[in-house]
Image (cartoon, rainbow, N blue to C red; front, side, top):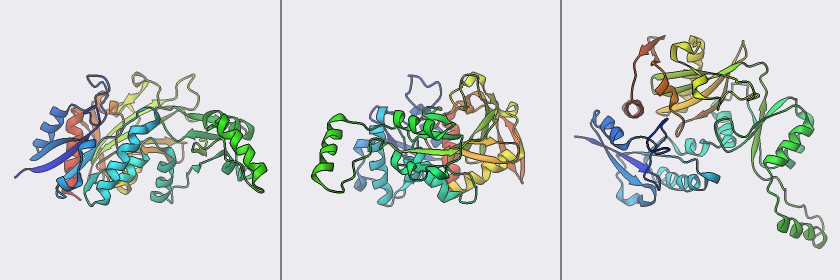
Length: 342
């Protein structure tokens, strides 16, 4: 008897992300994805997010969902509401809500990394206002990296060499200035003794240590037991950013200078996430590997498309498997394997 997979689609009827999708930004091919799950005796039912009703769903079914990179992340905020109530109602939602919250949300991702990897020794600090950073300015060491919380592909990442430069960047990119509200707030200081004005930089951000002299990093897609790896050289003119440098400039699979140590590092991260799949960015300074960022849904899939295969661990030994797979097949396989081993 077939089991059911409920897949929640966005307001355009799209699900997930797929490199070189047709039409553009339409996500995975829903027919191919449905067929991929059916190979494992799972029947797929697509439901629009706005149509989801808790009382109409079976708690024995697995629920998969999409995220969104809409301008301002307004629709993503709506997706969070729907997914959280499903999880709170006891449904098996994959991935867990916390990974949706962390998707393109560097502040929550950093807080989650602090929870999951308390022994890694490489953490950013998060802030909700410039004033909070000012309170600890004497403890800062420069240079350091400023990241705005939202966004992907290297957007909103800046190197600050001095404290004044950091403050200037925060004011420029994290401003919430509103002249009308500012004037009202100014009047309050005269009407109410001791009143503190609202911050004019209330968009959250993180700062993290700068790892000097990096020439590249690696992105690792993990689909349960398949590891798709590509190396991203830092291109001239892109400063400290390896991401967003163009997929034609990256090295994939066996050409990515992949070591057992790198794969073991990635594997240990993946174990703690407890999710069917993830994307992680890893840097290496010659002595230590660093987890820079991670995402567990709605990440790019170019590493699958351009690689001739993937790495897999058999009896504690890594080997490369030459195999070209469709993105939908890779995705479905990872979910099925995860469910079988839950």
